[in-house]
Structure formats: structure tokens, C-alpha cells
Image (cartoon, rainbow, N blue to C red; front, side, top):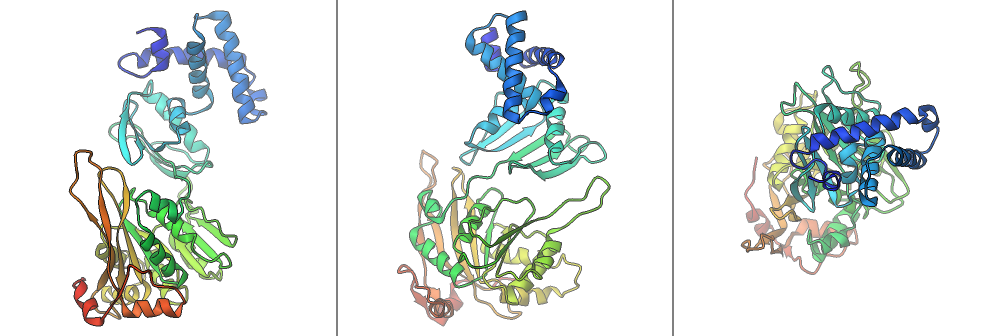
Length: 446
């Protein structure tokens, strides 16, 4: 393979190790000629320009003879290794990539437009991958080693990073970088086919009428994206408190307090959990509480907040259907140290939850609201949900693209009346069901 090809596609096939050695050689030469103290005083952009200029002089002086394209590519690679994240730098610069998955030095996958693909690039060695990982975690004052082999953190630039290394990871150091997309509005989600105009009107009415909404879905189904879009419907004068593991929500209102949990330090101390933040938020006079994801004992605190004066709150939960979301909330609520009977949790959920919005990520990578359901049960009776919107897919064609339509169903009369009292219009596509229709729409679960 020619030098040009090796520089342009350095980690393909068997040439990756050889070219990695070439980059390492020039990186060493570069470090010999720069003043590290001077470099540390420069801004990031100036530092990169200085290194590129010094390396250009080294190549001119010592060779090899390269074309302009080859020279630029080699300089970029060496400086990426010296300053940035090496082979990951071009991936981080690619706005179309939403997730980077490194499964050891020889296996790198990315997600684009909902589809996962393997890239023909790799790290030169296990050691180089570990150096990249250490550089990443050091930016958030964390460390990774055998005594602390797992790290989950948010980078200053907003990406969420998860690291797990041997002996826990058998295939080598594993790195996952999740980049959060820009905040989408509900009209933009209509353009993407995630919902339709009638559903937007209904969800907007629910949020403005202070219904408690649970956004449910699997990993990567778009829960945070939808939650962020729904939060934009909250009136700007209200005091909103957001609580997250990794700060992803991007609310545009003025009166927003953002809280983020904190893992324990290297000594195992100083942890602040989601539950700690939910409890503290109740003392902060919130109009609405938005929890990025409930996954443990904080669920009980969230349910109690929703049912005791904090109407209009929103949260997400991992589950595969509206019914499953309720069962999962019940299970998560039982994980609290408060010894509350399992049956009593039904009362908490029935009194707290009004709406479940179910999201699904389909085989073609598209994300759609597959169901909007209302919880109409009361007290300790079994959960009863009434679907008011569902996505009806058509058989998948040769293009493997998921097509279908949204079906709209009548709302329970009590829900329609609550919207009327809140001065929120009922969207034209939704009628009003009588009590018999509601009771027979879907069987109770639990």
C-alpha cells in the first residue's frame, strides 16, 4: 500500500500497526521540539496551530517527501494524537454521528441516523486506546484503573462517556461516547414522522393542563428528545427543576434550575443520587419537576411529588409498552428503603400518573410515538389504561422503511372535562367516549 493510502486510511487491513508506528515516531519528534510550559499557556486553537507549524518544519527538514494532501493528513493525525483523541477526533467532528462505540482497539462502531455500522479504523494498540481513555476521563477529574474499572461521566462539551476496562471487559478496554442531538421542537418531530399534528395538539393540551406525563421507551428510542420537546410547552413564568444523571435536557425557559447527580469519588465518598436531588427539589418551591429517568428508589419520591401538589411533572422510564411502564414504576418504587406494601404502590401510581407516551425505535432507525395512553384506574384497583393514539404499521416493503399511520381514539369523558376546565381545546380528531367504552377499551393489568 502506498504512503498516500496508508495516511488516508491508516487503520484498514494490516497496515494500521505500521502506520501507527509512523505517527508515533513523528509525535515523539514533535514533543522533543516544543516547550511544554509555553504550550500550556496557549488557548486550545493556538496550541493546535503551533504544533501544526512545528511539525510542518520537522517534515520539511527530515522528510519523508509527501504531496500536500499526504502532508496535511499526516500532520492532522500526529496533532490529533498529541492533543486530542487520535482516531476518534474525526468521528467527534462528524455531526451525523450520535454514538461512538469502541469495543477494544480493533473494533469501532458508530451510530448514524439510527443505524449502527462498523468502521474500518482501529487503534494502533491496546496501550494507545488506554491512553485515549485516560485522557478523556481526566477532563472530568476521574480515573480508571483496576481498582476503579468503570466510569460513567459527562464531558464538559456535553457528551456522555462510559468506560469499562479489563478484567471486567473481556475484549479489551471498552469506550462508549454518546452525543446528544440538538433540541428538537414538536413541529420538527412531526417532520421526522415521530408524531402527527393532532398528537402535538393533544400533548400540548396535556402539558398546559398540568397532567403528569411519563415518557416510556427502550434504549435509544428518543425519550430524552421527546421529553425536551414537551418541556418547551411549559409556560415560561413557571419555576422548573430538572433532575438528571447526565445533564441532557436543554430547556429554553428563563426560570430553570438544573440538577445533576454525582458519583462517589475515588475514595467511595461524596455520592449524590437522583433520590437525594428529588427530595431536595421539593424544598425548592418547584412548579414542575422533570426527572430525566427514574430507575430506582427515587421513583417513590417522584410519585409522591406528582400526587401532592406538583402536577404537570414529567419523567422518563425504560419499558416496552404503556402497561409495562406502570409495572416498572411499581417495581422501582418498591426499591426505596421505605417499607411500603406493593399493593399500596398501585394507589401512588394511580393517583400520580395521568399520561403514558410510549416511544419505539423501529428497524429502519426511525423513532415514533407508538401509543399515547391514559391511566384511568383509581385507588388500589388494578391498572387500567385507555389508548387514545396508536401507530398502525404497514407491512415492511423492499426498502425496509417502516410506514404506517396514526390512529386516534376517543378520550374518556373525565379527561375531556379536565381539559375543558383548563380551557384547553380538544383536538378535532379525538372524540369523547362514554364510561362503557372506557371500561372495555383495555383490560386491567397488575
